[in-house]
Amino acid sequence: MSWIFHNRDTVLAGVAPWGDRAVRAHSKMAGNLAMYAAVILITFITGAANETTAIAGTVLLAARVLYAAVYVAGIPYLRSAVFATGQFAMLVYIWQIFAHYLAN
Image (cartoon, rainbow, N blue to C red; front, side):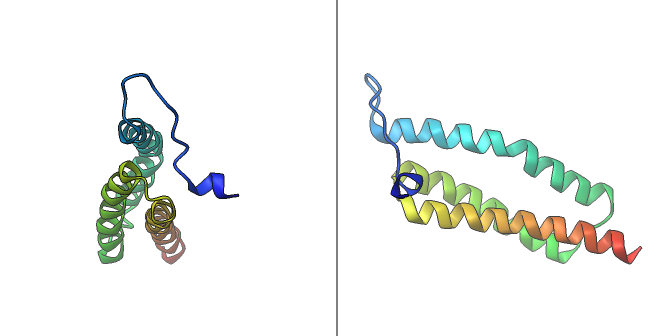
């Protein structure tokens, strides 16, 4: 179970462990970009954007920046908590889309 939370550092020739973590952080963030972009775009297209989504967007941006820094620093449990915070912000977007749809 602890493997899920730890850094899974692998040794690459000529690359420091933090450099390898930076590559993995970039890969994970790039992989999630399409999902985040789609949800945010749907929010704006449907007219569901409001003050709540503005706050969620700020939280999401801060969480993603902090996630990269924490991932590269190699702080395992904090990394999971920051990722969960970003995912919660995405759920707020999705909730606002459904609430807007049900209200109209």
